[in-house]
Amino acid sequence: MKLDKIAEVEENADLKKYNTYKIGGYAKRIIHPYSLKDVKKVLDEIKKADESYYILGNGSNVILPDEDYNGNIIVFDLLNNIEINKDKDEIEVEAGVTLGVLNETLLKNEYVNFYWANSIPGTLGGALVGNAGAYNHEIFEYLVSVTVIDKNGDLIKLKKDEIEYGYRRSNLNKCIVLGAKFKVEKGDVDEARELIKEQALKRMKSQPLSMPNAGSVFKNPEGDAAGRLIDSLGLKGYSIGGAMVSEVHANFIVNGGNATSKDIKELIKYIQKEVYDNYKIELELEQKIVRWN
Ligand SMILES: Cc1cc2nc3c(=O)[nH]c(=O)nc-3n(C[C@H](O)[C@H](O)[C@H](O)COP(=O)(O)OP(=O)(O)OC[C@H]3O[C@@H](n4cnc5c(N)ncnc54)[C@H](O)[C@@H]3O)c2cc1C
Image (cartoon, rainbow, N blue to C red; front, side, top):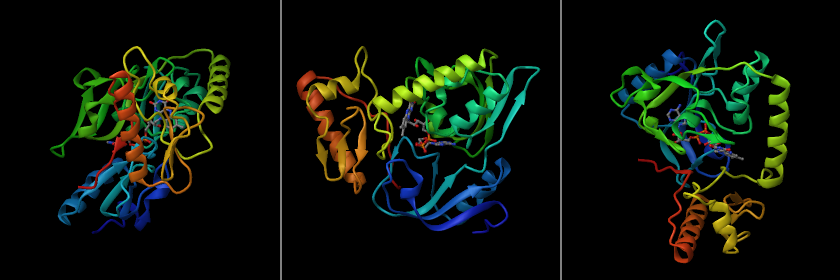
């Protein structure tokens, strides 16, 4: 594969470094395209070599398999440009920008409407695919359009109303997200920074931030909280292998040090069964189980 001018490449890469659960095997190759234009070239090279690929953001919402991957992981961490159009109060953001960097860049320009996203440890691409959100806000709220490579390999721009999305989901999972345009709003920057501080403190107290995890495991069922249901069954601290229901927040599974993907998936099934048997509620996964095809 001729990738030297279009991407940085790591051969035989340890995937544990690429996800917040710190699980998984090795990938044949991790490819970091240099620019948006290079993404298409990288895809062409992979196709020519008749190999497969998987797109990974910050790995903060995925459960990677234990097995090695005989394919290419594409990571957009070098696609991290943000362009601000102050006349129109709009921004163009590339898919690899992390939400924390996005918010900080906006605050420096007096735009405050992404303050809620500051503590979500994902990239824009991952956030759009899962419609990430917090504190009654979500990433689709200020969205204008998304630039994607669709399943036919065409580079297209989708307006917000051409995308299907809902609570922690969107049909962008069928595309490769390259970037997006958002409306931005000016406001009181000091107040926004104060809110961010409060939210970070709240998270430090209520989430197991010192142990590897991938955020909320389950979506909240209508009118209830997954964490409350799991906690009510006394499952905090329950473990399978190295995976444990967090003692701090019952809707988090933490890697106690040597958890495997299998441990996490078995624990998920166990929790789902317990909740169903006791409440007749089917907990839906928020995290994404990845399979190498
Ligand atoms: C401590 C902690 C707190 C969290 N708090 C929140 C929270 O408050 N709210 C919330 O919504 N989430 C939260 N999360 C979950 C997670 O951070 C978000 O879902 C985040 O948006 C995922 O982004 P990512 O880049 O890590 O995506 P990844 O986990 O890398 O990928 C998620 C999915 O998106 C796909 N994907 C990623 N990038 C692209 C792309 N460019 N094109 C196409 N597909 C792509 C991947 O293939 C995968 O299917 C939290 C996680 C942690 C660890």
